[in-house]
Length: 402
Image (cartoon, rainbow, N blue to C red; front, side, top):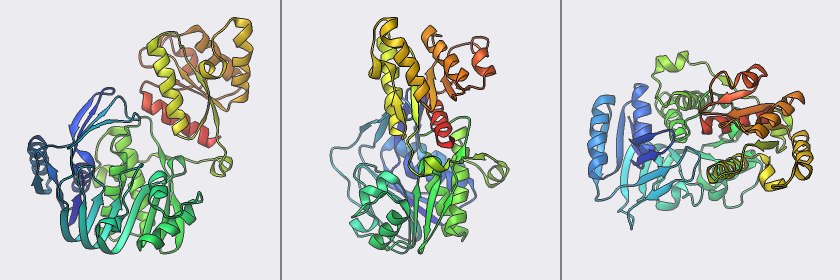
């Protein structure tokens, strides 16, 4: 049995619409149980969360070890890549104490968990101020860390940019046997007692981002601790299961995961060597809503590691003589185009055609336009998505392959 300890939170997203109680621990317990694993979920529960999770535990077949509290935590997102507004208790609750053979521990907002176990998988779940596994007195005979690059840099005493060396430093610092560093389109680095390997990430049509990291940690923990698989094999299974979750918002059974055959991402040599692809951000910017969309896309593309040329920010408004040639030169100098297509803005449509004539890849984000209106873009091999977060990821994946 795996003891899963971490947050059980309410998650709300405006678009696409989402209002569920999961959190890291609730999602991980569900994912492991769906694979046939035995799970005991430890967390703080306010009354509504406890009611929901009791029903879910009965449905999925896992056990609850509830610590009841007066107030829970809620995450409010605008979309899956937005920084959430977090509603949380004014002060932290008393630590949870768990002594089990196998533990999957997540970092929490409203408290912490002190675990003592034979095998532990730890995901700090905090890019800004991550806590080291041993910082609160937790111990494990065999420890695996699962984190992204930001968390790895936050925990490492002397962080470096080279992921292999970063993993080695984390292992030495924490006494971990295994360190998994998730690296976006480059997949995940697997450090296993001094040896390093990688597993791929996978391309999906849709990307549901909220909870994807929880899913990876859950499937890695189950495959490594319960099934006895190697860290490399467990990470490979976790990556495929995460792609299934991103595509469907669902949790695969073993049979569904065996049938799932996503396409691995293959980052180019120049991207792996540190090249930062340049993306041209095409879209109208004449109303407050349009300007918000341009600012949001520029931020999210930049946060995902791309260099962004935005006509609004980098050229500005003006007459045709003032701006057109500068905008076209921006397209010539970029590696690909991210276009916001709703409204069928004439300038944006022209920029898409100009880019395709130059052989530049185009990712089009359009929710409201008809198939007929998107015919030329579809017929000229543009990648088209009706979901904002999915479109951003499509752009990053296109860029990484160049």
